[in-house]
Image (cartoon, rainbow, N blue to C red; front, side, top):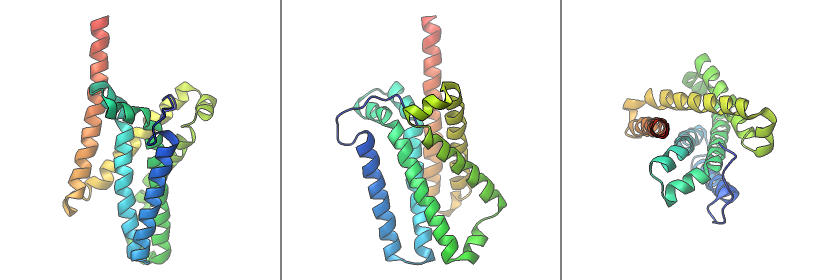
Length: 208
């Protein structure tokens, strides 16, 4: 989630992009709940939003790295809209939280079996990071906390969320093809980000 990207004129850009993604996510969640208006529907929304959150997170996570390693129209679009991709991730995970609350209300027993104290702690910390990062994804709020605090918050939060996703999908690795693909996506996103950092470091050594 960054605040420095310029404002372009395309339709799938900036606030229009965020509004479009949010609308599509909300419609998809509503459709799933309409098809199954009970606890199973809530669980479907939980799974759906976990996966959309993962994709949106990874797009924001490696946006700058992609543009640095493979400059082009698509990667420049990704970097230009990384703040909105980050906010779209926050929106997706807000819907995810709503589905969890709905599942708890519709099936308290099933919710209790699916969760534990560690789940509450890890999930609570993750949501605190998401809220703080989303709130500071605007110029005024970013300026208010200062560049150093902003950098620490977003760096720590980003990697905490990456680890949380890796644990959440990794522990289900054998339950279906979606989970190995999710783990591979996370590992690839991290590898791209680290490769871009190495590229910058090598470029600095050459210039020096």
